[in-house]
Length: 118
Ligand code: AMP
Ligand code: ZN
Image 1 (cartoon, helix red, strand yellow):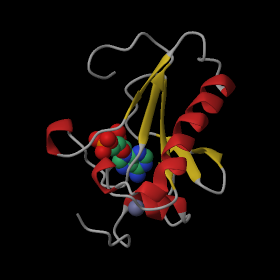
Image 2 (cartoon, helix red, strand yellow; image 1 turned 90 degrees about the vertical axis):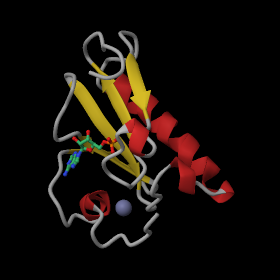
Image 3 (cartoon, protein in one colour; image 1 turned 180 degrees about the horizontal axis):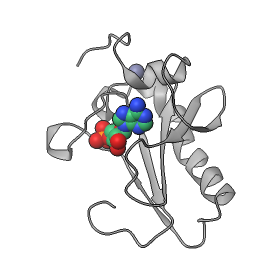
């Protein structure tokens, strides 16, 4: 998998080189609204480090990957969907339909979500 980040849309958003509605940032993570939401809440939680997919996660990334879920919890509470519930999805590779090869956690909620998504 390519590690060239110059054409990565999520790297460009992280570095303010492409537009996005950013809802959360910290030193490790940027989160922004999905451009094609499948539910009232559809946020992508993205590590600032370019990791193409779960297949490219390294042992030293474990804390970062865990942090994605802590951020999901924080955003869900901020948006008041912690109790109504939400779905977290990470797509990996062709059979999942992964379209952007910069690892990201979909946070989807605000309505009862159907299987597999939306
Ligand atoms: P995935 O199939 O997991 O790779 O999902 C990629 C997601 O990124 C899709 O839900 C797209 O709607 C979303 N997406 C693609 N480009 C952008 C963008 N420029 N800003 C926000 N979301 C985007
Ligand atoms: Zn990237």
